Length: 451
Image 1 (cartoon, rainbow, N blue to C red):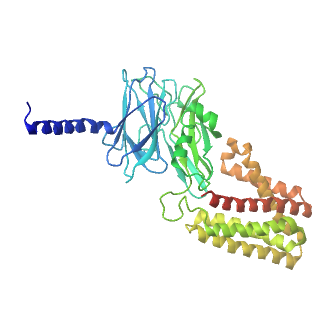
Image 2 (image 1 turned 90 degrees about the horizontal axis):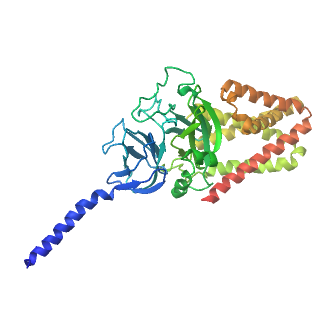
């Protein structure tokens, strides 16, 4: 018979042993090939990801993790170092497999104080598939399969490391820059895709759900919109317009036209705004100054759209306001670091001055055709913008800044010269320009209502 205290001691010892054996398993997650898995990352301890039963025909595994905005460190070892880890909200590591290797392990950790909702997925590639980021010369990792994304209020730029041709397990990788023929990585092509998230939605679960449509080649082609195709001789970067508050997912597919194979880089997303800033964050985009500015523009535009032909001075003032205000806003954004409200205020003041100047020129000189020329330039600018918004703007020749702006100016001039009749120019320009102002007004207030 057991002594009275022996049962309690054995029970306590059993609980301690069970706790010691169960604690490591609490941070261990086993995943399957090609399957999205949602995890809740604990900031107090790293999370271990295990993949087993890797087929023998797989030469590379691209493992990636996604969060909404919190940075996560993904590493190949428990103690991350510069050569085997990467940190970001959309980050991935490419593991080169060895002979007979059937399992892989990755580690996730975060310095964020709260628990983080994240999605992880691993994608297998064979020796015939291109290797994303394998010819990296810019970033820390030897193989960098991620998209480096930068944004501001107006422009989003993505850069990536060039890919290399695939190779078998334990084989030497092909040289990146020894030759430039069809037997080297220079035959590879890069397709850039874009995917818009639902409007007015900053929910993390929505983002992670839609990321599942943009991580494999077949899904990217089916769901994404192809923006451009780059050759290996082109710089590995692309720039697009930013839409603050609108979630966008970007990814790149590298294609081998000779073997008819392809692989996808790690997709990256942006809302073109900051979630953690105390002011001007993603939840406070409907600024009062913007609402006042576009409400004023919409009221004047609506008046001119219906009655502008009876009030020439008002129409000339508005066109002068548009031209000078637009140019001033671009200039201030490019060469200064002023706050948004300050830039908008200076834009409005400059626009009023430009509008009064155009009216004064008409009043002093009485030359209507010269004044209408400025109206025609606004119309030409809108026509050129609409043309380059179509697939015409996606042609590779227009990636050259000189070619783009020369062609843009030609469209502006042709649109202005063809409509030499002042009345026609005025009618077309005021209708298009004023309609755009009204759309801006509706968009600003619709955004506010969305939250």
